Image (tube, rainbow over all chains, first blue to last red; front, side, top):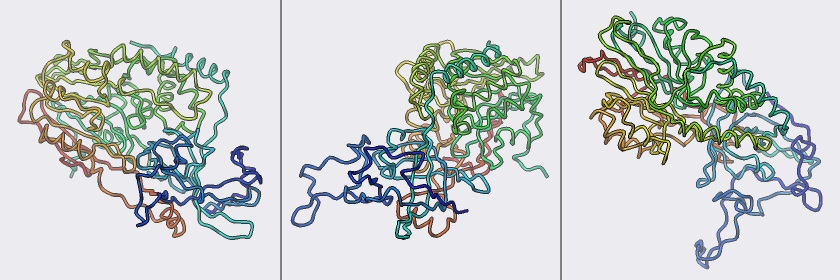
Length: 192
Length: 365
């Protein structure tokens, strides 16, 4: 079944933080296809690894040893016009982050599928949006969608996106309640 | 005609059945006279039914009366999936786990995460369901710790010609204290947590030793090496039975972190029967090539529940989805769900009766 996300990005529950918007109020959106990082080359066109390398965006973003997209591969999109049509959507759990290979492993369950299908996925770390980085850790829940972005002019572009689940913050009272309930349960179990 | 897999063991035979679907493992143990112990749980069927129960049902075991004990070696997801169903159905079985798993601090984590969408995915939440079942029943939980006899059956009681003992060799009190301390720290930071945190559970793993007559078997759970709380404690333990084991459920899926040379040299017979269940998550697969090489130098009798290195084909996605995934370098493959089963049977004190049978894709390393 095709799901149409009619809500523009800026009105999403995962609202775009101010620092993600440029001076025109537009949001930078990461291209979903991974690109090789360009290296400085010598006159023969061979990559020169002796030259100082610019800081990797991944390092700026706090991902150790992860490859990154060069700035020119970031695009500007109007935050108010973009739509995303979902062809398939999964719920996933991050199982392992492999910064050496710039990927993370996850277990996926397709949402809205007739039968439960468990799948393993390897996804590029670069596809994690900057404002999701604080949530990106082993054990975290995310949603992975494949579909089309539709521009204001109506152009369709195949795309995928990863959004991490934002749980309501637990309050101290929630934790006290959980502790009291846990105590009640454990007190009914005898230990030997 | 009954298939070989559906044949129950003889009354005087010990059986160790290891199931490993690819991610997860469970052991089903016949302790003699038609009685059984289940260690951990996994699921290899789309129905979600726990593999140990499916197997016992297939050989005609009455799980309500004949499963005497359920051991949860630790709370990791790959060892607990379906365990609450087993606890719920095996109403006469004594539940065994490390003491830290039945402390209110650990249960608090379960209560918190039970409200999130992690409820079906985390071993902490599986434990939370077990706590509720046991509390409702007013059950008694037997704590496993170093050198604790968990289940004894004398020959006078069973009418068999051997005594049976199931003993836990870990964890230590210190490992439990460390774990509870870590859980307390996690709870103090819970407001900021968005996923189940890693709480070094592998030093809490319950290692088991079975002694039946003059034969013993070592079940290594997921115990790893640790300077103070890991395998060194078990290896240097002078109180445990010093007899060498004829079979070993290799610790932590055969990983190097679970390997200890002294276990092989001091606790296992030469040519011990090594039983392995792999751990697969995408390309991350244990045991790796080096692990397999190491294990094969230590014994020629190593078996694994499934060929975990076989490549799986992704399902048939619509062409546009397939192209998008390909362009983005995203690989999605079905989770390996083997029904692989290694079965060791033997009559205690009779070495010539030892027999390993492999079913549903299990193979020799």
